[in-house]
Length: 198
Image (cartoon, rainbow, N blue to C red; front, side):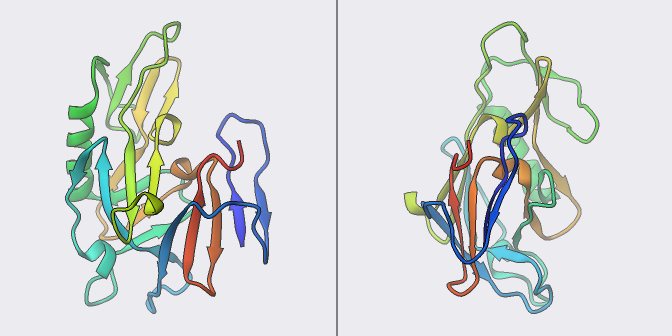
């Protein structure tokens, strides 16, 4: 099965197809079996970077815990990516360090890290988020930038990642907008084609 979620304000519909894919398989993750939760797509997230700074990961995010808890799920029905709270705190700390010359603003709703910029000025540039699957290799890299990292409204930009008090991480649809996804359950792979449906 393959699918594509359009950019939030593109005005385009989503794409879904079965038995074939229109997308290039430029980046691939391995689908990991989890007998406790067989209906979820677990992937082998290996490393996270913000720009060139690595965020330390607990091995349970790719090896599972003894009770098969932990791991990383790709879920297009979850809007924003969620990390276990300890990972999110480190992620947020490094992200703030990497933001240059954009003032912080008050939190909004569920978003705890927000910035303010002149809506009539140039678009501010925020750090890249790099997700590596399986190993640190360009063929296993999903590069997230701007709208996949931040949500914005009238000059206010908020980090589109959240923490929660669970051991599992979820990669959500905001981070996958515009990405062609190919779920190949026979080969146990999930492939990403960046900007495939823009």
